Length: 408
Image (tube, rainbow, N blue to C red):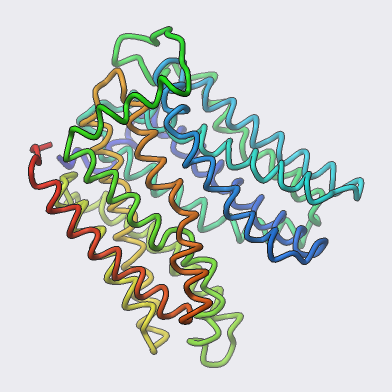
């Protein structure tokens, strides 16, 4: 299934939602730029820097399935608004602590965790809203463009964050960041879609953490769903967030004259791949949303990352980063689309939560597979071997999923 090209942008309800999502994702990254800089300047703590990564992704691992239950059982507009308000409250709290000069380590840790919780609360409800806006036929377009707008936010977040940091300073810069969450929050008051309009309305059932985990028993019997969830987890665990954190090392090793300039260009290439890939895939419509293309995209992501890790040539490394960005976006967007289409409608949010738990929550593991292992064998080798393991795991997931691969 490919759907109409740029169908989600033609949808008057979905279009402002995509723009608001991109702005909110940009705000997420702006906060990282400002707060990470301030925390390092104040505390100079490598342990706190490591906790920044852990606190961002572990809430996805622990809470995504339950938050998927909330998306299944409540108005997704309100679930997302709560997440956005939590983002805004965290940014405002950083600003107050910066302004008063009273920031302590434990307060920083609490705010970092709350920021991660807001992100994990946002995820499942966001995907249900996409399905409600466009339905099954145009869902591939909506998921792909949503991923593209998120990539735009990731791409421009560091640029805008640095401008706010230099132009307004960390205190007023973080206060200004609150405004970028508002468009999505306000729009959700104006749309009639709740995440459940196409399924007949919002069910009202009691939701518990233990009860929400029952969906795991249902999912494990569907080899196709399991293979898609495993694919998302493999990319997350073996590469995940480590590529960006390891980029200064690659910039130093590959930059001919200026490591600083090389670092900026490598980061831009990494982000641009996702944006260019989303636009190209949407414009051509040549990559159908099938399990086979999800597997192939994940494999290409693994191969390009391995080649990047061992590349001695700077222009080649840039090209491989762009290819990896395209493949990563394709793999993730196809996986999310298929998971939504294959999930039972009554459990769609929880199944998405399981996928989010795997594809987002396991990103903390890349700090082990690439970061800690890199301290023993070097980051080039740890990233290359991790990407090779991703390729091997992808082939194993493909073999497992072959037992039942429906046409979608």
